[in-house]
Length: 363
Ligand SMILES: Nc1ncnc2c1ncn2[C@@H]1O[C@H](COP(=O)(O)OP(=O)(O)O)[C@@H](O)[C@H]1O
Ligand SMILES: [Mg+2]
Image 1 (tube, rainbow, N blue to C red):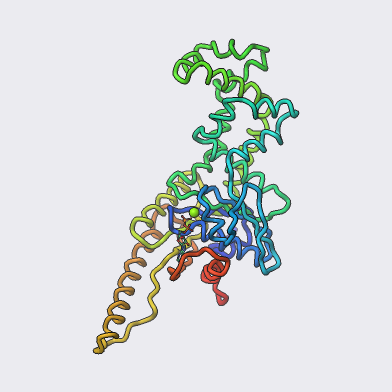
Image 2 (tube, rainbow, N blue to C red):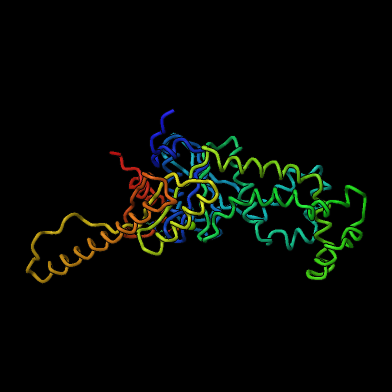
């Protein structure tokens, strides 16, 4: 077989089932996710954009004044496809999973009423990432959508949700988890299980009540872990498959390029690959300046300004070249440049402007 040609951003948008926008904070991930969603909908795809960022930026970028919810809402698009958007709410998603997967109402209520579940489970490190992975699984299998675009949070650990399914799988296989599940298997009481040496030690640190609540939670959970484990395995396969594509959003500054390299390396370390790059907020150059410096005072200022912009743009190009030459970047990866607009992107009209810069009609 011959090597497939390098896919363009437009190819990814047309072919992907899941498209993940990553990059450091403030570069324009959310803006890009929204603009890609708009383009996909205009091309006829039934697209849902999900933001894992608790900040309201996606609603802002899509011009939704009342904000987004955990349930997808449909936005008006003048095209054959559909555009939906939602903002992940960890607690609501977890509750929904418990209700959907419990053997019966009784089991669901026991978990939902559990103190450990109510007060601790949601804030445990990893729960948010795990819920993002669960949500991705659900949206990918939702018959209403054929493309899920993920807008990741503005932190360095934004891609931790990629690891969440395998962490969960390891946890379920762990002897400690098996021990926590013992009560239902052997008909032991919560107190007896909490008396196990390992858990006794944990109990001394976190407090006996917390431990008892936790044991009761896992006890109530028994039987559901199989489904959680299965979905985790499916998400691992989904993320590694050709269905999922990664778009790295960067801006052409030294510090953000450094961060972009980190994300490329992070993906590569997980056996994944940057599919396309968007370099956002580039300094516009307005063409070549006149060969000679003008004499009139008002024009001199403009001329110098133009030279300054050109110098900035040249430095930016060097930064981007450094990024594209990075060993973690695929050779010849498709790269799209978007200039800095005069104002923020917080209406459908400005989003449409970004969209047409990403996908110029002549391209
Ligand atoms: N090309 C652009 N020109 C001007 N402003 C932009 C552009 N792209 C994004 N912005 C603005 O930059 C800010 C950060 O963008 P956002 O998409 O929220 O970044 P991120 O999600 O990476 O943190 C927002 O206020 C947005 O309106
Ligand atoms: Mg964002």
